[in-house]
Length: 376
Image (tube, rainbow, N blue to C red; front, side):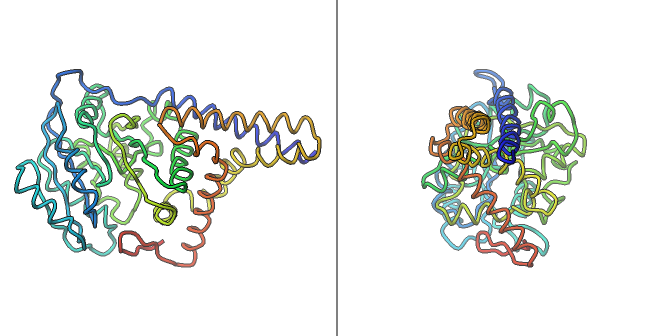
């Protein structure tokens, strides 16, 4: 009876994920832009950079290749210890569209990236601010399609997850789990229908916002001590009366977020306590993720071993739902098939990161990123 009950629970949670995922994939569309040949105003492409010597050159090439929109590219060198500043300075000397800012000292209570983006926003000259991480590579139509979509939909902020480039097995297994939580549990149709700030979501890798809406929301200064700008800025724009939305940015940008298992663990850990890793949230996420994505595979194995027919059928159906939804996600977002085959393992790694982050936060340990330490 216990095995049957667990199989029913796993099936219910798996069905919730699969239905939500497929609905969200149906409504999450790439930005269409303003049409072929149209010019979509002027955009300030703003790139915070700290020790990005390997990335900044290709990032500048992609940003400067934009078509259909006038651009300036402003890079803030945030105390780099490598050649980042020198590379940007050389490009600025050769192309008047490029400007280099030298970052001010990090004030107490600020996060490094948040402070860098705030400084960039104050230096920007154009009416649309497009915040882009240094490891993002924009398609030549990216800025025009983002701003054109904002004009068509009457949006104040539009954000999207670039196509995630994954090299090592750890990246392939863990990084796609970002979309498991986003597309499996954020009801996008409801988020679009309701202005509630709680439904605000975005990706700090690629985020376009109108200058007026940014100022009304207080900009990055309004959440100076927070890591998760992809959540904070859309929510504050909504709270100040603006409209925000998410798009599928896979066709217009790519990003290799982390390189290797260590970087994946550290990167996911740095802002975990602003998301899942809280005393209230983690039990709920554990039920949803473990119960819907791992439990069905465990109960299926147990049912087959015990010869429990109904439990095996129910657990098998749950596994099929999860893997089917993950396969649809992989096709749409160009994810590696290893991420589908090893999906339960990826979920377990994400949960392990959250529990370790919660434990470290409770003990007062600090989170490190880019050579800086922050309160956990």
